[in-house]
Image (cartoon, rainbow, N blue to C red; front, side, top):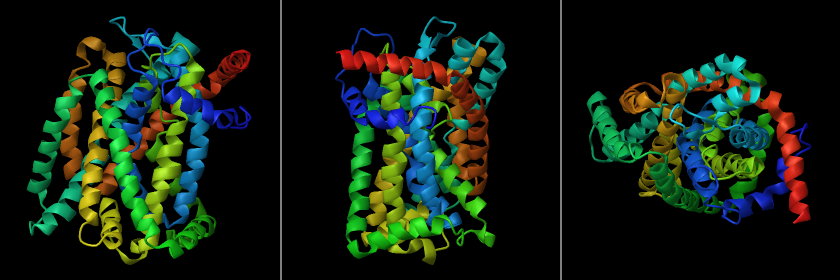
Length: 421
């Protein structure tokens, strides 16, 4: 942010024009357009992290954790701009000759072949980091605690397993269709899931207008006291907010550059500008709405639940009798679209390590992980996700920092040409 002198923040208007297709050229190299690249990336980021990730943060760290989620998002605007610009700037070709993007290609093409071990680290961690274990875990929890509970059916390993198998069956129909199908499905469902969820949350928030300002003030006041954290440790509160925020928007992790690296464009800066919108949509807008719903309804203080079940309680208080069903519908779309996008990332990592001939094998490993996620505990799943995300972030951010001057050089050239036109 400092090095770029807040450059990404100054061009939000231009980024939106790019997003709506003003500069699309079907003859440019790549596999999907700007909007589909953003939708695919958002399908992976706008998901259970916005629903249950926020609940985990508040339940563990209090409302102040949301402030640090915002911090991660503002930093994420810059990191997404740089990493996704680099994804187009330094695209490489896999062993089948297909044009590809992502941190592994940025490292090899931008830093040189001698840096390949760093690319291997990213891809190895990515094979685990992009597994849908959190999404499967929380969706299964929602089915168990909302749908089955209302039907009088006790949740068990068997019901979790059945839910997991249904998820596998539905996901397979889309996943084995490749990036074009993923882009089309995500492009159709992401706006739908976002509008439905936002409308429901806004209804809850504006049903208690007098609590909105106190709720926002509580986020700010609790952000620096750490009172809600066990032992009053401010550092723990910051870590909780940053990790949940990063889990939500994935800025700096390296997944989004793989989607944006497939965009049809010759302008790296243009794609970086589109990508930087993701933390705004994901964390600043949607996560904040979820947080206010949890705070306004008071469930964060009154319930012993965690994750998606806590959010379901907030929906049921805000919309008695049917709120938790609306949430279940929303998270069905959230979790499914996220699961549609993640295998694209995994197959790219697998292909980089073992070749495109065998990349399809990852999808079977991916499907098996859904069963694991649906039957494991939430704490185990969160620890796995955080650990491997951290391992992915290390090579992604090292390459971004080292290659940042080249992005700035390209940005100056791009914006000077804009002014001339």
